[in-house]
Length: 581
Image (cartoon, rainbow, N blue to C red):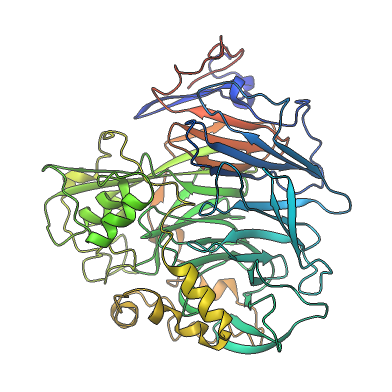
C-alpha cells in the first residue's frame, strides 16, 4: 500500500473505489485483451473501442463484445462479473492490412444467437458490414473511397432500423447509407436538400437509388462523434470546431448549438430521458447542456487532460419520491417498455417521466454520468436537483433559470415540476431500477417509414416526421418561447457555411453559446481515479458492472457494489498493490 502523502501514491493505479452506493472493484479475471495479453504499443494507432450486443439467447449468457486493437478486431463471449474471461477462444478475429478499424456498432434489432450485423469503420474511409458469428463479410461500403477518403470517426445504426446507418468522417461530413443499396462505381453527385447555420444536407443525384442517401456537412474540421437521442428523433454531433450541434434527424433541422470553452469537442452522450446532453473535449471539461432550454447548465472540472468519453449511468440515475410509484406514461409508452423485454414500468426512464408529470409532488432526481480521459483518469459525476433547478441565478447573465416555462422535450417528459431546496441532497439509491440498454432503446416504426420514404425519393425525407409517429408539435413553440435563444440573432451571422467565416471564440465567450466559467455551476467529481497506464478510450455502464478500456488494449470490468461475489474464478478479489482512497 502506498504511504499517505507519498509521491508514489499519485501514480498508483487504483483497483477499487467507493461511492455512496458502495464499493466498485476491478475484476482482474474479467479482463479482455488480445490473447497474448501483451500491452499493445499504441503509438500512432487509432483509439481502442468496445461495442456490446446481447443475442437474446436462452442460455442467459448472450452478451458479446467486439474491440479493435491496432490492425486487429476481436469478437468474444462477454462473461462479465460471472466468469473469468477465456481469451484463447475468440469467436472471430480479423487482421487488416493497409488500414485500421477505428469504430464499430452492432445492430441490436436484428441480433440473434445465429447471426449478428456488425458495422466497422476504417482509417482509410471504408465501412465494412460483417457477421462475426457466421464469419461472413457481407458488404464493403465506400470501397473505392469515392464517397470520402478521410478516416471514419463514428458509425452507428439508425435507431429502429434494420438497414439504415450513419457514418461520420474526419472531413466533417456524415453520410446516411442503406445496406441494401450499392455505392456505385463513380463519385456521387449531390443536390442541396437543406441548408442552415454551419450545416448543409445534400441528396445523392442518380437515376437508380444508391449510397449515400444523404450527405451532411457539419461545421469546420473533423466531426468527432455523434449520438442519437434515446427516442431516436434527435442527433447530437460534436466537432473539432468546438461546437455541439443538435439536429432533428427526420426533418433535418438544427435544434440548438453550444460552444466548448476552448478547443475541439471529442465526445457526446444523452441522458436516459433525453433531457440533457453531456460533452467532453480539449478544454478538459465536461459540459452539461439542457435540451429543453438549449443552454449550458453546468460544467465539470476534474480531468487534467482531454476528455475522450462521456456516458450516463442509467442504472444509478435515480428518482426519489414519497408516494408509491405508478406508471404515468401512455399505453404506447408502456407497450414500448414491454417490447424491450424488460417490463419494468418503474424503470429509470418512466420514473424520470413521472418526476416531471403534471402531478407536482416533491420529487428528487439525480443523474449519474462518468468520463474518462487522456489523463488515464475515471471521473464519476452526480447531476443533482440544485444544479438542474437553481432557485437563485448565479449572476445577471442568467436571469431565467427555471425550467417551468419551457415546453417538454420530445422524449415525452415535461419540465414543469416545482422542487424544494431540501431535495438538493443526493438521494439514497433505490432498488436496481434500470433501463433497457441505451443502444437497444426506442426501436420504433422508424425503419419502415424511413426506408419507404427514401426508396420512393429522398425529396420526401424532410417530411418524414409527419409520417413517422404522432408528434407533439411543440418544437416551434419552444423555439419562440424559451428564454435563452439557442441561436440568437446576434450569433446568426457568425456561422455561415457558405462564407466559411470562422467563429471568433472571443465573440462567443459570455454568450448563451459559451457562458463564462463564473456564470454556470462548476461540478466537482464524486471520484477521480487513475485506473490505467495509457490514455482511456472506453467507458460503458452495464447493469452489474462498468467497462473501461485503455490504449494498451486492455478492457477492464469493474463490478458494481454487491455484484462481485458471484464470480466463479478463485482469488479474484486479491489484486496486488490495489488501493482505495
